[in-house]
Every structure is written in C-alpha cells, then in structure tokens.
Length: 420
Image 1 (cartoon, rainbow, N blue to C red):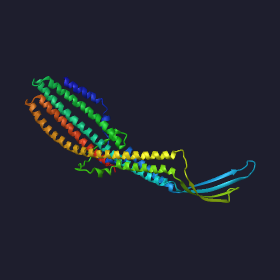
Image 2: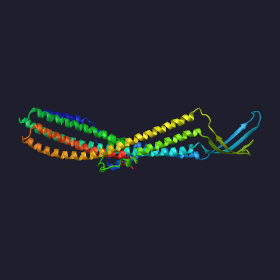
Image 3: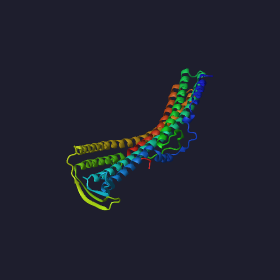
Image 4: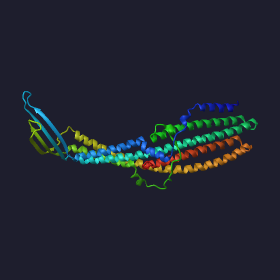
C-alpha cells in the first residue's frame, strides 16, 4: 500500500468512528424560512417572556386606577365584657372610604403605570427585532455550514485529482518530491476543513434550535434561503430614530421616572378622605340597633423622619439619570443606524465583487490545469492559481452569509424584523 493510499485509508477509518447522527439530519423534517418564522413567533422563550411582561404591565396599569375608586370593607364582632356574666355585645358594619385628595398620587400612579406599559411594549418590539436578527443569522449560518460542507467535498475531490496528476508526473520524473508532498498536504488540509464543516453544522443546528424554541437540535433541517431586500440608497436618521423601540422605551422610562417624583412628593402633601359606615349593635345576633356615621378626615403630614423628603430627592435623581440615559442612547442609536445602513450596503457590494472574482478564478484555474497537464505551467504557478480558486469559493460563500447578517443587523437597528 502506497503512502497516499495508507493516508486515505486511515482518514476514512477514523472518520467512520464519528457519530454520524450528531452531524446528519436524516429523518428530520425540513423547515422552510416561513416555517421557521412561525415557530420562532410561537415558541421563542425570549418572546414569550416579553409578551408576559406586557401583560403584567397592563394589569398593573388597571390596578393603578384603584386609587380613584372607593374601598369597601365589612366587619363583625362579639365582645364579652365580664366572663362571670352573660353581658355581651354584637356588632356588624360596612364601611366605605373614598379618597378625595392624595397629594396627586393617584394621577401620578396611573400615568406611571401607563408609561411602564409603553416601556414594556417597546421592550416587546426590541425582543421581536432581536428574535428576527437571531433567526436570520442562525438560518444563514446553517445554510452556510451546509453549503460549506458541499464545498469541502468539492475541494477534496479537486485536491484528490490534483494529487493524482502530480503523482503521475512525479512517478514519470517530470515533477519533484516537494510538489508531491505539498499536494498530499493540501489534500489533508481539505479533509480537515471538511471535519470543521461537519462540526459547524452541529453548532449551527444548536443555535437555530434555540431560536426556534426546540430542544432537539438534530431535528433541525432547513430548505431554501432567507428572502432578501435591496438596501435603501438614502436614509433619514432622525425620522428612523423616532420609530426605534429602544428610543421609545427610553422616553417611556423617563416619563415613568418623572411620575415617580410626583408620587414621592405626594407624601409631603395632605390627604382628604370621605368615610361612611352603616352598622348595627346589640346584645343578640343579628343586632337590631342601628349605628350609622359619615365623616370627612383631613390628614396633614408634619414630620416623618425625613423619609418623604429623601424619597423625593431620590426620585428626582433617578429622573435626572433617566434623562441622561435617554440623551446618550439617542446618540448611540444614530450611530447604530448609520453603521447598520453602511454595513448593509457594503455587504451587498462585496457579495457582487466576490462572485466576480470567483468567476475569474474558475476560468483561470481551468486554463492553468490544462497548461500544467501539458507541461506549459510550473507547479508553483499552478498551485497559486488553484489556491486562489479555493479561497475565492470560500469568500463567495461567506459573503452570501454576511450579506444576510448585514441586512438583519440593519433591520434590528431600526427595531424591525420578520416577527409579526
């Protein structure tokens, strides 16, 4: 057995020991892009959490309206005055209390709850944009990994053909041993890169499964490609900024912080309550003697140990921090929008350039192979052209993946995506 045959045999025997089920997708139902979008919208854990946070905020907003409504309570009691006698009193009453003024706390609480709901809704939009980015990136990564495996197989076949050609010339005395060894090493490198491609498929499956909300990554198989849209030629950053959910969230958080200041200040203001009680009292159950009352109470805070004052100062500081955060975020988002757009445009152009280079490299390689076979080209020059072809094939494949990721980044910068 020749050294080349022994190398091929050992590699094949070692590769057979790898668990094919780990890499393969046999038996897995193929998922189209549309199916992946539907599964993500239904099963993505981050999206479910964001929806639950919106519902919690909505319930909290409804709860805040309770301050405008009266509170009603019922009570019943039995009092025995002396254990040695039978004298006792039964009481039963219903009390209603209506707050007339609480230092503007009720209005501020409702406004704060509305702002928190708006912030939660903006967070949901952020989660949708993130899920869309994750889905597009993961789908493109798996498509790239699968196509890269096919390319790795093509490269191995090409390297094997090249090795046979060099070996024949070496055995015929027309090529040196170094060229033969280099061709054999190139084949080993191609087989190693195929192993990397197999591993990349497993990782890409795990990544896509997480986005889809699936636990069995081996059941994830895809068909088709991510739909594409052309990048816009010009953008209006200020107009886009107003629609970005992160910006809307920061405005809502600033609004909530402002209402927190009003809530804290309410502790420094008087409160006014109207109370009415309808009750009965007597020595027997159910008592017959009516005891009804109504009244108005005014409570004026005088000293609370400084807690209300410092709570107000703390809320004011939080409001100032929220304003500063909003200003910083605004500038950051402008940069993010500009970078997202330019990256998208450049990725579109780079894909076109890489495809043109690939076309040129393929033509050169075909001509170079013929020349080398006929002794019109040296091995060194031929090897350079062959390596350039393989590099261009890899670059064209990567630029297709990067183009999809760049579009997803641009959509995420705007807070948009494919998740309804």
